[in-house]
Length: 298
Image (tube, rainbow, N blue to C red):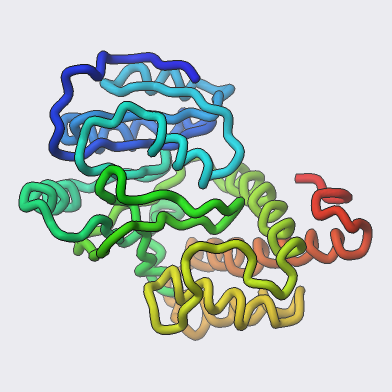
């Protein structure tokens, strides 16, 4: 682990600390950092030893730059929770391709000023794809990103991880933005890697519920409901067939077709191509190996 940047010994004890995870994000990270500069008490960039200009871009901002080897997102987030010298009561996680609009910052500032009884808050994730907000079929997606320091950890999963909060949780009104500027080639390469990890988890868990910490509940939070659907419905459907049902649901039943070509491209890639790739890799593992990681390359 290496530290670069400003001295953190005299920071305030109240307000919000922002933690940004990054790897080869020189096209995105400036917007993420710009959106929290002058608002957050402190900003940490946890970088997985990027090979592009991410560090150079980040050093142009008032932040603490930390390098830590990446294993998975859960371990990276828990490293940040456990090891960073965070000096604020509240912590906000961002990815480098995400940013905060002014309305959300005002809402968070007002929230932490009144010291709420909740220890964590879900925020709506707004996807901007090819310059367009993909609303139908995907929005709102609620993600827990704001939490009281010391009251949350990330469940230990290789994929599909969630923050688990000790205590009550609430929801914020405003959205945060996801806007990846690296292009579709990078998106495909990244999701090829994600598909490998998803297939490994599916292979290792088979029909079991796996090692989740969030309960699978149909009538729970959005995360609990998604987990219930994954284990009780999705995993019991035939591989190679289920992605077509999912695409039909996302693109047709929820009205994705009403939002033009960018929405079609996104739903095709994310709701059809990506789960198909997971299933293909999963079937390859079943055919050629008893070891979940053999015979499959990212």
